[in-house]
Length: 367
Image 1: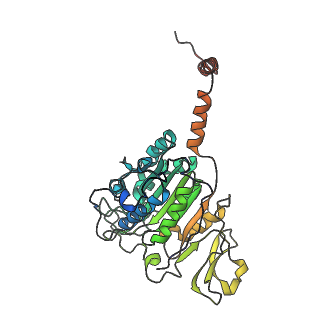
Image 2: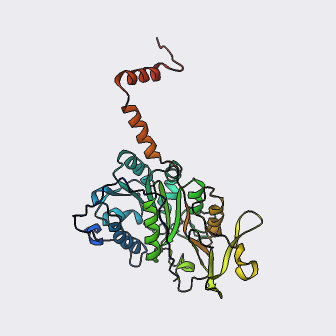
Image 3: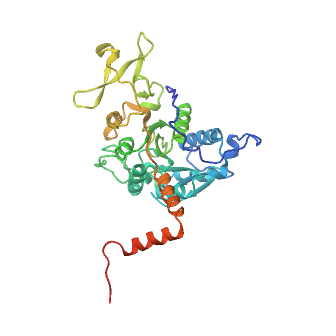
């Protein structure tokens, strides 16, 4: 499998206000973030790889364990908090972003993470997910996408491809699936990325950038379910992925495929006449026609067009990396500013404002 480098600094730190481990304290390791709970996933599940990557990555943040919290919903991925020696909560089906919003707003000193799956986040939890994204709450959302319901034993999910035969669709699914990256971009997500469970180097790089971002960081992780949907991402997880993985690296031309004489991929992404993007042979269109990736671009139109290369659940070529990373005010910062502003008022001003709220506008007298 092709490993993807991702030199991508955060625009500003999403964890800059969280207490850090002191210089005089022992350096943390992955073992410090590993709980004593038995990990209970099926053999070969992609969740193991993500867990190991997260446990190995968390010490690099330099944060105290008591200032890190993982909130999950319901599903195989939602067992995640049990296996980390941080604070955590196995919450309600689909409601993890809502609970995490409350935590992030009330506790500026926390690094808040949400772990969810394609069923948990995009079915019953779809409403909470899109509103967390549009509000830009300071949290990191990891969506494990295996395109199936695993915990309940193999029903089709909101990301299963059309025609998918499962226990709940015995003659094939007729639903049109969600594209999680497209959904996140459409909800005005300020950080939107995609990575793969089995590429630890790339996964860790994306997690680093997501944690450094102030606002809602959304990371879709292609994750294999060997029991109920084995091989769903074989195109981008097999041995030969040069023609399947389209690496997105900020500031670099989007090229992939078998290297040409220049040492770069022989294929690339170009704009098409309809306003979208398409794959082209570099030798036919010229290197200057290839799109240079700009994840900092305020307008998400091009990022959305690239996300549609995996439209309708058909996975043949998939952009992998950070689609968008932009700055905009966060919900929790603004909420805390309003509270601070109200607290700064003297008693007389506060009473006057309260009287204005109660007696202002339309009033009724009930007799």
